[in-house]
Image 1 (tube, rainbow, N blue to C red):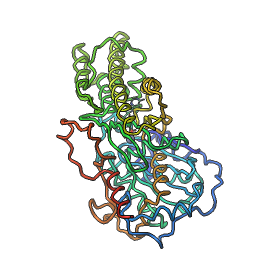
Image 2 (image 1 turned 90 degrees about the vertical axis):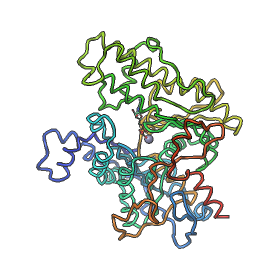
Image 3 (image 1 turned 90 degrees about the horizontal axis):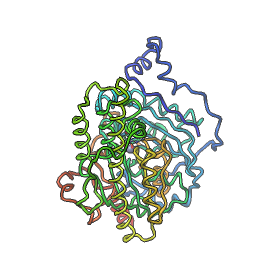
Image 4 (image 1 turned 180 degrees about the vertical axis):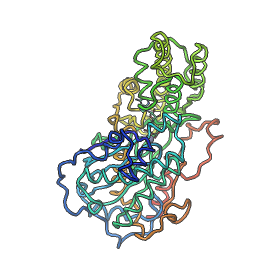
Length: 484
Ligand code: KG4
Ligand code: ZN
């Protein structure tokens, strides 16, 4: 596999690079090294990869909203190895792309992170994130193709995240995907970001069959999902306020950690030095006998602990503190992490109980999303899973955090079932590409994955459930009914 991580771009420097190389500020070479790495050895790709014929498209709404080919036609005509899909991901702060073959072989992947922006502004500012995506998207995609020694002509289809996420950011990836698909007459597959986090486990563990249980933990989501089949999910639990990744990021910031590594990884590292029992934070939502999550209260407890020790939460870099104060911050980090993860453990225990009643054949808990790259999280959840006679499927860290591989792979899964949209017109005007709720490809910033399990509904949650889109599962089931 050819893989590159583009160094976190200082976007002003990146902009200079794009406009005129001779104006490069010193130090830019290091920032741009991801674009100029050595070319990878040629792959054994057949000169013409497989593309569906659109002559026989049936007018059935697909996962992404427009048409789909009858899956039986595709299964008959496609060999997995011949399918090659480009995946594009821009839903939050990483610009990522990958090319994956239908059999799961990762031909290349590139990620350009906005960690520098995040550390400077303390969170994702949508407009700035959009600009950063726009600055690098062409290069990220080009490098992905170059690393795989492919051109667009070798692709079978393009998959792109259409939600959930920040509209401005999603739009950058969707416009790029539609431009490529239009110019090279390729089908396009709209991807649900959280489904992609879950399904990438099936690329890694080839034996992982439906049904399975999935815990998806990232910066914006905390989901417990029962996956009955492709596109068929039941939501057992979700967060009623913040996601665990947000709690890691805030705690890391308040403790003065170097956010350029990402808040979660920095906090995990500091927590190794601390005593996890020194601060007695209470475990969230114990009185609620469901599978929902809450991290807002734990964040408040951490903040109060920091203030009670007279630690500053502004201009407080840990690199300039005494060893005694560093130890205190490490104790807070470790105590926070213990309770944050205990909350996950307790909810997973209950979800396993619920899931086994609904689908007794479940054998596996998938844990994915950025926070699943945390070693402590993986170890603790492995105990829970083993105790219950299940197996843990946790993708490698680079496939847990946002990446293009998961998008390409989920595209492959849907593509092989006949769920995709036909190529856009090559002359599609840019400004009409992503009109929300229009005939064109729509974005779905708030998009549930599955329907809520009846026991999973909480009053607190229903208060803030203003949904913009029907869930992925209900769209797919609706189109399947039209098909019969
Ligand atoms: O899935 P992801 O890459 O992006 C979103 O979809 O949000 O998840 C990002 C989140 C961030 O909050 C980040 O701090 C967290 O995952 N994260 C971690 C670790 N690596 C990333 N949290 C805890 N420990 C880690 N090692
Ligand atoms: Zn994510």
